Image (cartoon, helix red, strand yellow):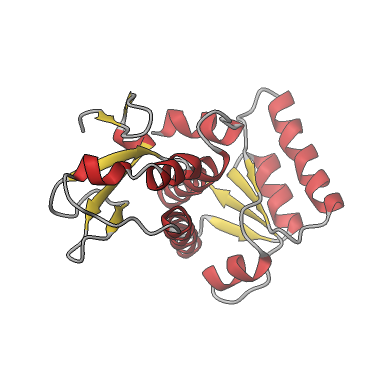
Length: 209
């Protein structure tokens, strides 16, 4: 897909690094994460700060050439949609056998090279996070891959996503479904962190893209 221009920064970027918006039937601004909605679209750098800025400066009207109304909470809506997409991808990874839970299983997956990402619930205790961080660093020290870690969801959300289990620590395993889940997770983290704060997770996902 051809490169697109962000209406906030006026910089050209790949569509995967931007979010498309269209005008809805009621002239509301609608996020088009799958980039398949009909009609004229405009693009914003995939970060919460840029979406909020586009709303605040009323840039969607000029870009969509219509008297559209952007909800003041549009940035929050996009966050919710990205989170839902990431959790859905996690469920698919679970169904494909590419997602494990529990500190001991996560540690084993990291040290064996099966894990491509680690997830910690918001409620995760520092000691549990530290132990898995040690396992991740040990793999890197042995010239293994960088295994990113994320702390994006509360325990209840992670548990609900995979069928009601308690989830404090989890690992996404290598495989098509697992890597698809990591891409969605990275997109959510980058949206929240901003484009100027590229994480190891983002760097690790670029090769896969």
